[in-house]
Structure formats: C-alpha cells, structure tokens
Image (cartoon, rainbow, N blue to C red; front, side, top):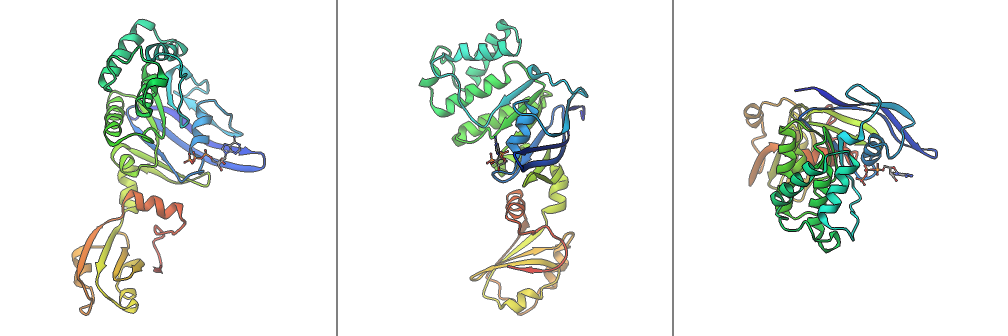
Length: 309
Ligand SMILES: Nc1ncnc2c1ncn2[C@@H]1O[C@H](COP(=O)(O)OP(=O)(O)OP(=O)(O)O)[C@@H](O)[C@H]1O
C-alpha cells in the first residue's frame, strides 16, 4: 500500500489570459480512491484533461511511477462528456477500446462478457450502442474504461445520470477495483458517494487547493459539531452561548456551529437556563456542508471569532 502511481506537481494552466488552475499538487496511490472535488468551474476537468494529455499544462509536472512518460495504455478514463460511436455494437466497441490500449483481444472478449453479465447487460453484446438506454450506455462506457485492467482509473462524474440502483452497481465496482489494487481518481458532486468511497480528498476552488488530506483527517479537522435548536429564542441569548463560532437562524430554528474540540456534555451543562428548547439535535457538519461552505465563501471553517448569519 501507499505505492505512488500518479504524482501531480504544481500544475498550472491558463486559457488566454485567464488562469484556470494554479499550483495543483496531489498524488494517487495504488489501491486508493482519491476524490477530486470542487464547485462547477473549479478546474477539476481541466486538471484531469492535463493528466490525460488532452491538453498540456503551462506549469508543473505529471509523473506516473516516477516517469514523465505517461503510459496512457495503463490508464482508464471515463470522461465527463459521455458518448460512444452509436452505430457500432457493444462488443465491437469494447474490443476496439481494448485494442487502442494494446490489450489482447481474447482476454478482452472474456472480460467484456463477464462485465456485461455483472452489470445486468448479458446478451447485449450484439446490440447497437444507439439502442441502449442512457444508463446502459454509461455502463458500457465504464467497461470500456476498465477492460484493459488499468493501473490508474480516472472517473469524471461517473454517477451523473444514473438511477439509484445503477449508482450502487458503479459504487460497488469502484470499491472492488480499488480493493484489487487500482489507483482511482474520482471526480463527483455526490458528496454521499464521495464520503463513502474516498480514502483521501483534494478540494479545489477557483483553480486552487483548499483541502487535501485523508477523509478521516478532513472530517476531524473540519467536521465540527453543530447543534440545532428548535424553539423561540432572542438573538442576544443565542449570541452569548459559549464555544460557538457561527449562528444561523431562520424562524424558530437555530443552528449553532461549535468550535473544534468542544466537550459536548460540558457544553450542554453551560447552556443558559432560560433557553427555549422544543427540539435539540447535536450532530456533525457533513462533507456536503463543508463543501457548500467553501464553495459559497461562507467560511464556516474559520475557527476564530463568532459570525452571525
Ligand atoms: N477550452 C477552454 N477554453 C477556455 N476556458 C476553458 C476551457 N476549458 C475550461 N475552461 C474554463 O476553465 C474553468 C474550469 O473548467 P473545468 O471544466 O475544469 O471545471 P470543473 O471543475 O470540471 O467544473 P464542472 O464541475 O462544472 O465540470 C471554467 O471557468 C471554464 O470555463
């Protein structure tokens, strides 16, 4: 474990005068799922396209097993833009992708049949791509990305457009590939999937790194406790509750975002006696909330000072 497959260092790219990404550095290791997250237009696909050699960076470097020669046949890629040749049958398209990656045709055919079966597409090998539903087409595209047993798999929004059942199928397959040693770089807006799947995260905002680290560490660092109180309470009373760095109120619902390392039993004892509580819930800020916070520049993660929204 921890064998480094991909290393991206100080990557920078501009289009005309506009700087799209700058100083992007991260690694992807064998057998791990690395999430690359960020709001629309943050620069995720640009980063991925630079890795794939679809465009070239202005600055920085990309190494695969320590070499700047990127062996594309060892990489699998599910692009954000979907679309396979429509007038070709499923098996031919899968064999074509295998051939592009110099993968033996006989092995490819065996793997294709196994995957079609696994994804509920048994018997579809002679069906034309245009006759498949969107979800089925996406499954075929995922098979095309993994048919040649890539060492590194890059998935750009793999779950978009899939129904919940197909999302589960994709999720399980991604987990299995990682368990078998594939290094996976996953871009997704579905935070529940990211939270469940990813070992590490790289969050990008306006082309720059905002978070990079193991999922557990990110949660420990940013996912502080929050306390939701339903009850009619004056602003002044809420504002003076200790160890709160931000308060959000809407009608009779208030969310108190607590500082890091608050000891909940002690904190509960310190609540003012006159607080009106109809309901009180304590849980942690989710990855979804951390994401929204960063993307909307609310700065919930700033740890000093109280903010009142
Ligand atoms: N070929 C291009 N020419 C000019 N600008 C581009 C080009 N490709 C991307 N951009 C710009 O680069 C920025 C980042 O785009 P990118 O597609 O990398 O974002 P993203 O994080 O993948 O977003 P999304 O979540 O919407 O897919 C955007 O402002 C986009 O308009």
